[in-house]
Image (cartoon, rainbow, N blue to C red; front, side):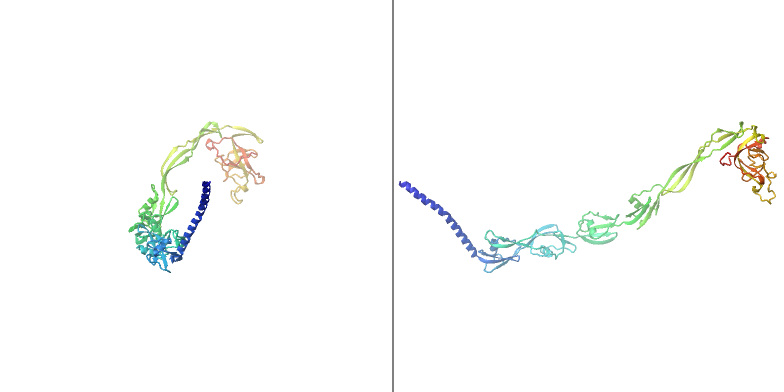
Length: 509
């Protein structure tokens, strides 16, 4: 029984012992926290100003530097601490910290990371021992500035807590370090059309330098070295200026600029070729001057062949087998052809001269040969006045007239008389004596027998004017057949081929 009771006591004692261990630990931790809190409140009070921002803290550090370290304030060698970092702490001490700010400086081919207390660009350059010249450019990041430009913008502040001591201190939060670039100006000599001057530039290429200096370049100007050439100090840039000129050619005007010395050089520059007898004004060796106009007259020659027809002749030959007033074609006529070769001169497409070089008959004409009848046949015609015997019938245009309309005034001594001197009355007709011989007797249907005893200024060819007495005038204006009565006149008086005139329409009655 004893062991069992002993075991139950032991158990009862052990459990409470375990339950009492946790409070003891909590008690110990709380005691330590109280000790730490009390320790911190027993530290020496200290005021710290970082770049003008003040905070209060307590510390058991022996020196200024150690106090700043325990407060989590990291210092760079360039930072300023007052009083010094080795100064022992004393009650009421105020520690001032002025941080040096980072800057990147690019100058003379070197890039340096600096920390500085300078506030302007000029102060930083003086600290770094960089002395810009009067034409050098200063660039802060992407902006061109002057030496008195502010180096930094506004500073943002945060307050951090040291994980080691719980002491709080202000910390500056700044943007990325600014980049200060010193662009050195290179000196170069500019020879602009013979006028020389010295330039200072920070441009990278010749073209940029000329644009920066306001130098205007024209088409045709030559720049040596080229516009894309990189600038080097001591370089000489030469500009050979072109002059404005004009070229009149092929119906257009070309306005351009040139450095050529002569007109020939100008045409070569523009790729204008001269051919054969082309003429240039002024001449090719004429010197170029400003606003010159060169005129090119295109001169060309060509051979031109012209054709001219040669009319053929008509030859009549008698044919005794063919009746009078009958015709037949023996040989058809053909027009000939004459060729002329000309040398024609054109200036700017306009003909200015022409020379006959050759003339020849390409094809001679062929004479047309016609036969006319010379055989006379006597025929008889029954008329209201009885039968008549005639040897030729001619279709003529007939009119009528009297002594009053013959063209002579009444007081004229030959008034009323005909060409043969007989008085004018019905039965007297006027004819063309080359067609109908004078004194021939004619029969005109509707008129009767007429004697060819008169002529007239308008009576030509196959035209017969019928005479009337003044009291019995009849008007005639039409074509009719007239019959030449026998006897037949001598063959020498016969006109075998009659003229084709007049050509009034033949309106038969």
